[in-house]
Length: 175
Image (cartoon, rainbow, N blue to C red; front, side, top):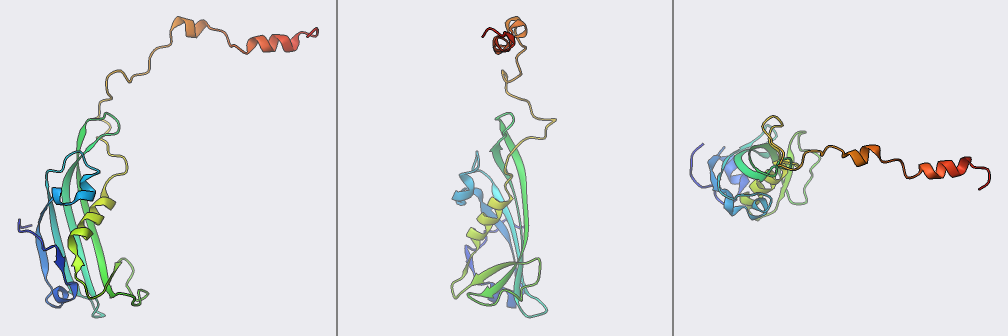
């Protein structure tokens, strides 16, 4: 993938007529909603969008996104770098148009006369691709010190059940 910036807004119909491929990079820090879930906003999102018309002459495009993000591991509470890859197929339909004819496997994008906000689409895709619980690989993850299970003390081992007195009262017929 090249390192040219991607345009923030595009007309997918015009790009599909020319079978255009947009290949570029986007600074991670420009995606504010995504960065609010991350521990660090440094990095580059590698993007590739391929626009075309399918056999029905409908506008479709394929997106591929790759980025390495830093999040807090929920096991050890240290930073973990996670590779995120997202790949989606979209079908563009006119706003309010029939979405029943869209082939299976395509996500529908309803588009009026306004151009498609490509940056919002990238951010939405990456948000959906983030792990729900970020964590290191279990064999690489170390629990923080002090979180190990303590051994029971002698008092806890020899302490009797507080309800044993009730059991004795239940057996005593004079009560």
